[in-house]
Amino acid sequence: MRALGRDEPPETFSLGGATYRRTRIVKHDFWAATAFYESPTAGPAVAKINRAAPFCGISLEWIGRFLRDREIRFYHALADLSNVPRLLGTIGPTGFVHAFVPGRPLSRQQAIPDDFFSQLAELFREIHRRRIAYVDANKPENILLGADGRPHLIDFQISYDLHELGDNFVNRAILRRLAAEDDYHILKHKRKLRPDLLTAEEAERSRRRSGFVNLHRFLTRPYFIIRRWTMRRLRESGRVLPEGSK
Image 1: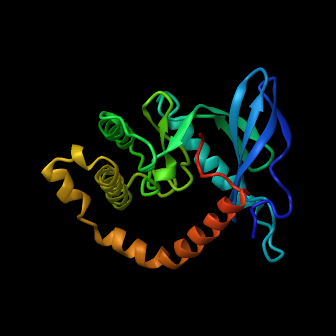
Image 2: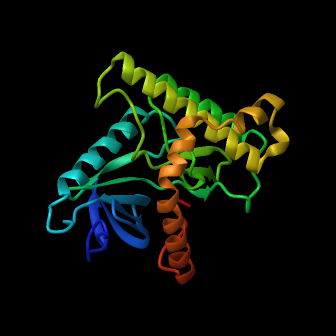
């Protein structure tokens, strides 16, 4: 079921004249493997290798290439934002590399600066202004509290824009709906982590789940129950680290 079958992310690779050596495998699931790397000349980086192994005898490398190219598109579209890690290049047929972001995923185990969520909301406003919905904001591990105290976003695998289905009325409506869900999830994290900063209006909105969110939770609940149990066991065994750059 692993994205690379029995293989692991490469121990070393060269990119932009620098040689990187793998320091830790972070995650290896059906769709992708993620690992941390270090270069003595270029510093730390993160490599994400999308699906390359066949499944039930069927080649899925084309899906890995599609997912890589799709995610790279979002990194290019947001390349001028300092809250999004810099894309460094591609490796192999399905992989890409981005700069490492010093920091930790959002959690109750760390103090959240007073201005963190206002900066995060402004970041999402800019992303939405560019007609992109992040979509994965419900996962706190994708939102990093950087060592600089600022929010940073990683993992644009399921982000959404008007590229695949075109700039039309229906697709624009879908994009607006997904952008609204981004805003809801930001407020949900704020309510859990810094409830003292919530306004009355924000508190009400953070509890107003849409039909879209309710349907998504109903359909994906069995998968996430199994996934959380599996990832907890793997972290307890030391085989994987918490998701996200840190």
